[in-house]
Image 1: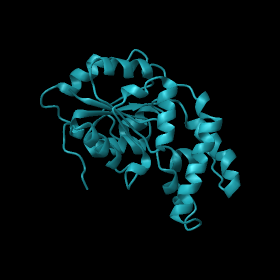
Image 2: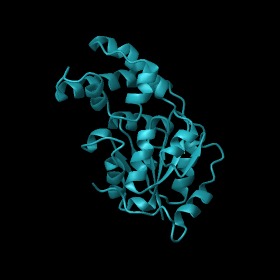
Image 3: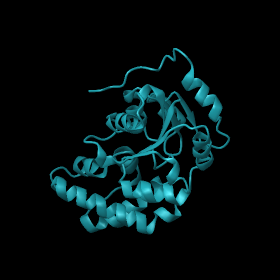
Image 4: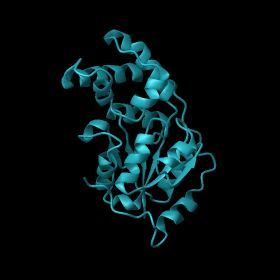
Length: 231
């Protein structure tokens, strides 16, 4: 039986605009200025401490970047998270996979507190066997580490996992891990996700064909069942 790994922002909930607004409001405390193109190029799908160093090299120590990142995410949880809309059909998809005994994981660049809150708000926390957050691995997407770790905790090789991802960095990470990737075009156009290697792409999960996906994943000799990038 294959397993399913879900990113969080843009896959469980449509939250990128909320994160962008949270950075605009919170960032003023530290002189951080992020416009929309910068957000989608440098921030979306990545760990906060990494993009802060990329945009503001040398301004803060790693400890300070982690503290700023944690403060911003607490601000997001307080002011934005309870209001972000779910991706249409995602709860039904999660429930359908769980009913078919598919092991489920969340693998997000965000903090564990965000993942716990969002899955609780969606009413599906108990259905996820594994939860991997950004700081659980030493390197962030597009490195495959987070998906390799999620697969390891699920007890399956990455080639037996499907990853649902909305960001180009996340799609690249899933492909490098050796997983089957379904791109979710909530943040970027489907063609961008396919160009990064997504095997298929959907606008959302409305009417998603769960059994068709599981049949594709279980097909013998599936060409994309390749070993992951373990470097």
